[in-house]
Image (tube, rainbow, N blue to C red):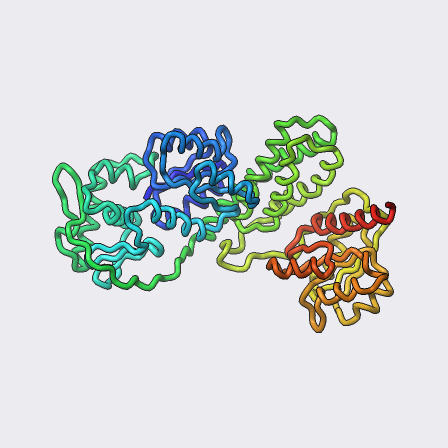
Length: 500
């Protein structure tokens, strides 16, 4: 199966090509929308994968242009925007599906298989021909119950014959479907692969004419298709060299990323000086957008969230003010530091627990708080997390009291008289939501800003928290500047209310 990938992030493109090739897809990869249009209108593909934001011609416009030319090839859009408006725009433009960055390669491959099944004449996920079984989900092939070991190209050739038989496939059609546009093999190459594939099938018990040759015209499967048998048990997909591949790619991606992030610093400096152009702000947004996908695909989730925050800020339709730019500076420097300090990718994203702390440090001061040194009390049974907080939040000059023994909550609360309270939900012998409910029943604490910081992410718990009187709900892990800004936001609201 042949796929066109249009993605301007070269690191992400390389990762996707590697994963798709491991699942026996042939991939043409280009890096801008105009090249995507040229390839899509010149060659035949089974599927097209487009990034939403592309140079020269964005993914939405490219999708619309393809559909206006009556191109019915399935299209899957990649986007870092999880908002429903972005998804609706993608589907309205003619896309068949979308995947939100950072790309989970297993989900991507599953969605590709689903789209190909929808557009294929063969709806069964397991393809059979006589005693032959081919499982596209696991890339396993058996004949009469015996496993058949094939090279990548032999597998692709057999799958293509299964999808098209009993129709005849010419050598030219095979070359077009199984080799990328950058390769130029001869017809003898196809005949050589056919000969080796036929030999392996015969050795395992298939008849000599299982792959039938029509001299001068092409090939087809010559036996009748039998009833489907139970699918073979899938084996776990193993990629022992994938982590090595990721680290090799990161060693080339890291210096380029740091160089591109300098553009964001330039845009922030220009905004602060009042000399920034719309073009520079748009370029900064494009770079932040690109790094949401890149960093997330490498498993650098904290850096990804920083890039996402920058992208959201730069997405403003109007020019950002100098005050807004000051808030962006800590984000940008924290992102650069995180990228620079990541010397090695520790584990394959999505397969092992990623190294991840609860909060990201940003060692910079930002705009002053609503009042001098507001008192913030933070209650959590995670003692390591509590030890980090005073240092991490020092730039905002909060007067922080941490409490790791929730049983002492009421005594410490009365002694500290906090201006804002941050609570975990699940703690020994006490529940953060119950504490909130009790506080709201006491007149002295009814207007105390209360924020939940928890690893519990389900919507039902969040809705319950707001019903019980929580002012804000934050999910771990969280970036330091985000926690500080959310606290400041609640303090500013209380200050505005008291002055009204």
